[in-house]
Image 1 (cartoon, rainbow, N blue to C red):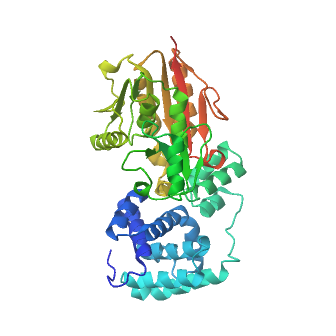
Image 2 (cartoon, helix red, strand yellow):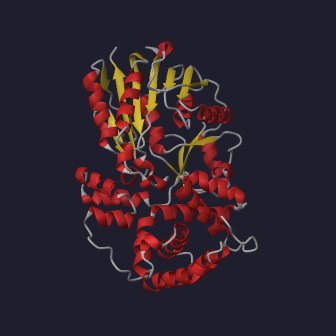
Image 3 (spheres, rainbow, N blue to C red):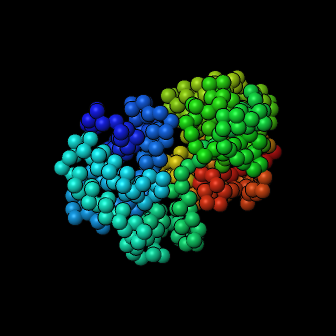
Length: 447
């Protein structure tokens, strides 16, 4: 991206714009793009937080912003070049969602950004569109067809096919609340490494650092923060915590891990469930973390080393292919299968760009992995299946089909705090559970 090196007043917006371009042009994950531009522009904590909020906010609300850009722009929508649309989205997002940024500053800084990257000729258009949005923001033209999938798709910037799917299975108010929850600023959930520090002592460390947090119900050492840079939290280098959503941590808790167990994690990357299991095992027994990508296994190994976990070993392999040495060997087999990821749209808003056709192969892959994983569970052992999605064909339908074909397994109900499974299954929803959208099923092999 070309920009004027002497104009650094807009460094956070420049970084956000480049991150958006990487997501759009290269298909990059927003987290990776933001990490890269934070380092490139040497952003401090304040500018880094603003760049992240701008980038994620635009991705979360792109269709909504586009509706008003196209409404107020004299140029037809398909003639706006992609980079210019990114700039307009940044400006509209600031005007409509960020109350702490004055309207005048949002307009002027966005126009300055346009000029700083060499789009001087488009600055007049940007200025005109943003000023009209600013003038009308208290009485914006309504989005048409309220009460329809098209309305929800624009208002909350989710693909219309997904909205239609959800409305077939849930009430309108439930779907609307789910979509709205996906557009809230994502929180950061840390799990205390109780092998090194007690939850109480780590909470005191957060308080001394003036970092606000809340305790998750039913999970010792699960703390929810408003946000922040992970590596700057107290005790990162010392391995006093790791990052994992409460829903995923609840899945491991549901499995009933005990010290000395023999545990397999078949789709382990990025390692959160393996780390949780190792801690619950009190770092005893045997824990094998597998993944098809060796690069991801190195990240798991580095994470285990930082946390000081010794019982964990890694192995590369395709989770669909049988390993003879694993047959009937494990007390617990965890399989967090590849999925559509529609439960983590809030944290990875670029998932909204997925087409429905892209997901058609997933149920078959999931069924293969589940069937293979079941072969590794010893009699009396537990098979834990999970996804970070909310579609039935990847969740309940998979389990019901598996149980029908494999009578040696049965559903095993579980309780975590006030959370109670139904037929061994539970679906977490962001608007009701305050977590990622996440599915977990606990199955037991009959003895």
